[in-house]
Length: 250
Image (cartoon, rainbow, N blue to C red; front, side, top):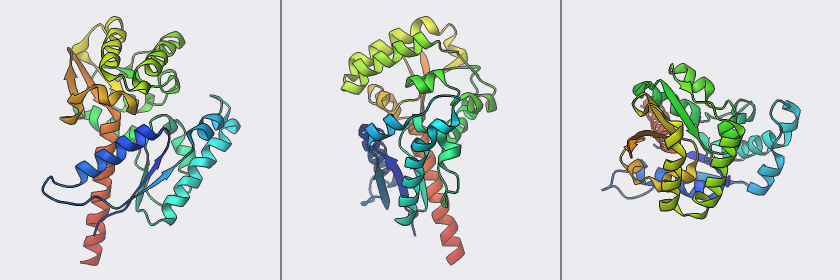
C-alpha cells in the first residue's frame, strides 16, 4: 500500500514541474518502474499574486489564504493522504492556510530545520523572493538550530529580485549562477561558519551539485537547497504513512 501525495502547484508552474519530476525520480529505485500516486492542484499564479496581502495586515490575506485552503480541500477530496505546497513564498501563510486541514501538510520550514540541525551553521544567508528575504519566514526555523540570519536590506532584496528576473526566471542558469556568486561574495565574510539557503525553486537548476545532496559545496560556499529538503521530507512522510497503514492492516 502506498500513500497518495497531493501537490499544490502553479505558483509558478516551473516549480511544480521540478517537484513532480523529483518526486517521481526519487520515489522509486532505478530498477523499479512506475511512479507514486499523486494529484496536482494547479493554481492560477496571476490570481495568487493579486491576492497577496500586506505584511502586518492580517485581514488583507483573507483571499490569498482562502485560495490555498480550497486547494487543500480539493486535494483531500481526491483521496490524498498528505499534501505540500510546491513553492517557498506561500509558506509565509502556512499556519493560516492549514487551519482545519484534514490531512498532514508537509512544511518546507520543518524540512529545512531537519537539515540545518545536522549542519549546525552559525549564520545563514537566505536567497529567494523579496517576501522571503525581507520577511521572517525562516527566522524561527533558524533559531531552532541556533543559527542567526544575515539581515537583508530592502535594497539588497530588490537587487536579488532583479537577478531572479534577469536570469533564473528566464532559464539562463549558467549566467545566473555566476551572478549569484557575485552577489554572495561581498555579503559572506566567513564561509566556514555559514550556509547559503537557496529558498527559491527556480535557482536549483543552476547547481547540478544538488542532485548529489541537499547540502552541497560550490565555489567555496556551503549551500542548502530548501526545495530538495522539502521533496525528501514529502517522500519520508508518504513512506511513514504507508508503513503505518500497512501495520494497521497487518
